Image (tube, rainbow, N blue to C red):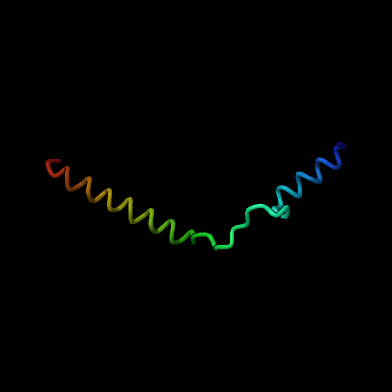
Length: 55
């Protein structure tokens, strides 16, 4: 197998055109992911401050 054939096969494999797994759904919005993480962290902060009333 020559270097050119190997490179061509790797490019085809990386591009996903070989008939492999294709995601049909849209990914999560970064705004939703970041907002969810922010809310979860704020909830954890609130819980932590409720247990630390003596300080």
